[in-house]
Figure 1: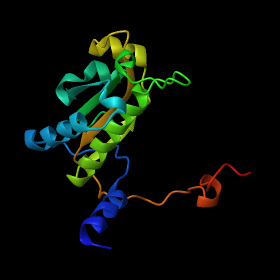
Figure 2: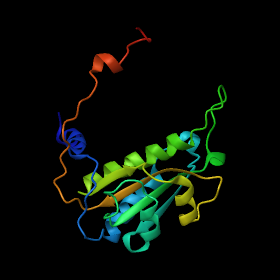
Figure 3: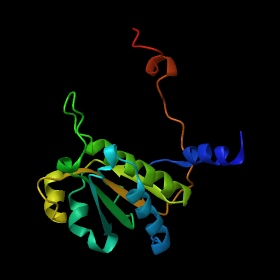
Length: 178
């Protein structure tokens, strides 16, 4: 395996959900690279049905109260990832709207970029969506896909091994077979 490929896989060995952050700002150069990763992400038919709100710690008192679990409030930055369904590509055969898929792809790419930068992240789904929308002034026709905590981790970025289903249980070849 060549060095670039090894580095790519090593990134996934460091990627983990971080809930405790250092009280240290993220430089504008680093943040700019991460936001550019969001902007350049792929989306179905290049519709880019997303909007992102960057919220600094100093501006988050009310937002922190709308999170239903502890552990994210210390992050220097939280990014609200929003989907705009009316802008998304819709599959013709079954009318599936790809807004959430597209936002999830962009966020995943940004999370990988953050890991490469040495930053910790956590996908936050433990929130009160209606309240968060009101606090952040998000229009009714937008969906909050997630909030992403972002900052310098208090611990080493090294993924702990968790129980995972075996490949035989989750992978099928050729077609679905019992």
